[in-house]
Amino acid sequence: MRRWNGWGDEATEYHLPPSAVRYLERVLGPGRPSPDADFDAVVRTVPATALPADPRIAADPADRLRHARGQSLPDWVATRSGRIGALPDGIARPASSDDVRGLFDYARSSGARLIPYGGGTSVVGGVNPRPSDRPALTVSLSRMTRLLDLDAVSGLARFEAGVAGPDIESQLAPHGYTLGHFPQSWELSTLGGWVMTRSSGQQSYYYGRMEDLFAGGSVETPSGPLDLPPHPASAAGPDLRQLILGSEGRFGILTSAIVRVRRRPEVERFYGIFFRDLHSGIQAVREMAQASVPVSMLRLSDPEETDATLNLAGKDFAVSSARFGLNVLGYGAGLCLLIVGLTGDRLSVDYAWETALTIANRHKGLAVGRVVGSAWRKSRFRNPYLRNSLWDLGYAADTLETAVPWSNVAGVAQAIKTAIRGALETSGGRVLAFSHISHVYADGASLYITYLWPRAADPDRTLDQWRAMKTAASKVITAVRGTISHHHGVGLDHAPYLAAEKGPVGISMLEAVAAALDPNRILNPGKLLD
Ligand SMILES: Cc1cc2nc3c(=O)[nH]c(=O)nc-3n(C[C@H](O)[C@H](O)[C@H](O)COP(=O)(O)OP(=O)(O)OC[C@H]3O[C@@H](n4cnc5c(N)ncnc54)[C@H](O)[C@@H]3O)c2cc1C
Image (cartoon, rainbow, N blue to C red; front, side, top):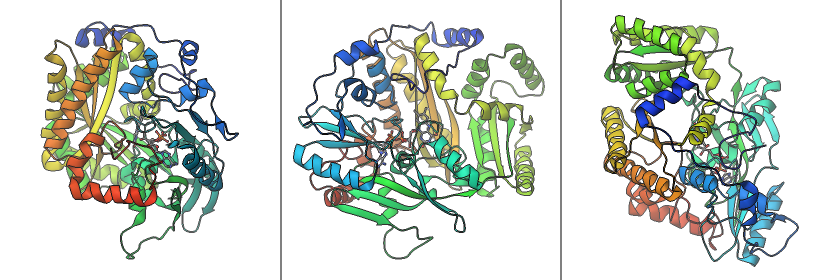
């Protein structure tokens, strides 16, 4: 059973080893655990639905509670404290495009707003109802999960949009294919959600981001169906697929998507390379990206993240011995870990590794084989469970991300971390902020910042702390003209910053599209465009 107030399946735990807890206490002070709200007690507070009864709509309070929030920090505060705020008035689970069309009619006659819901893993408030005098109906795509067609000659697969990561791979595997889209939320997030948020998988350097993988599909809009044929390329005016990508359920509901799939790779390996400092590591990954070295992933942690990763691993003896050895070799306080992913046929993987090593050597990189990389791979989808354990220990954790040109990467990462620390430390709080480069391009890279702090006993105070840090970081991102999101999307939390990025003309273009496709403003109010 899925947790209602945290990440993942209730049966899966990620316990922190005692030495990791001691590390957190040393860096952040003791955590302040407080009891969670009881599910049944919160269900009893769910108000009556404002929707007219309809056999297509479930108005069960527990179901509505489970669909009220996603995975943002405010969502965690809400569900752990039981202060949920606005709830959907009902859940519809269409099984076809016709069903979706029927729901638009229902929305028009009942005055309801529709919130498309994939896996509910949005970290920016993308699936949250907002307080409103109009009822909210969550439209869950959970019954639309089939592989509809596989064109093996072209490498194109059409799926219903509600299919989640593991289900995509298990339906492709018997045919020898993979989509290769592995966001950290892969266990629960869905194809429709990925398209609608321009998601990026961990190996997007090889497989491509969602905008590279999305070849076409079918979108139901309140103004009628929009068919997006899978043209390999086209000069017939602006590409409408690009308008749908990232539209966050404002323009329509994606019912099926055609995606570019590949033969399953012969080999997949993850290696570790240590650098003496962040500057050397950044130089190396930039050169690898600009030389188009055919790796599948380059993930470079800054010294603080490298240190935190080693400490949280809890393997005290192994880690301290490794550190001692690294120190002797001159890899000390500035130590940065790069994980290199290699995917493909044996020949290209060997070539990619040799080329990556040659570049790393120029920057005094120390390759340490596959132990660290394999450990990362093993825990890649388990790591989100750490947030449950941290919360239980009394620590809050959140992440944010951006992308900037190479010339700005190091400076912006530093400025964001400084802003986050400053925002909490002025009120006497302690915060651990660290970053990694998660996705690389020829012209720049994405920065992924994680921040942890002891949460307050009062949930509202925790929320204030988060807001101060998030605002400070977002202001830095906007000031340096980074993007407000490289892959999490806009939702509610980033909507105030979108105008700075798109400009008044850009925003009015998006608003005009929303008005054309959804003239009665039925879909996902407040998300993307405020
Ligand atoms: C632990 C964790 C790790 C994450 N790691 C990554 C990562 O590595 N890479 C990454 O890109 N993101 C990541 N995310 C963010 C999140 O998983 C992505 O934004 C994902 O694409 C959301 O998919 P979903 O199916 O859960 O969509 P939801 O959260 O259900 O919805 C997201 C948005 O899309 C809309 N939507 C969903 N389905 C449809 C549809 N069929 N038609 C129209 N609109 C729709 C919703 O209304 C909402 O606005 C992570 C989140 C968590 C909690």
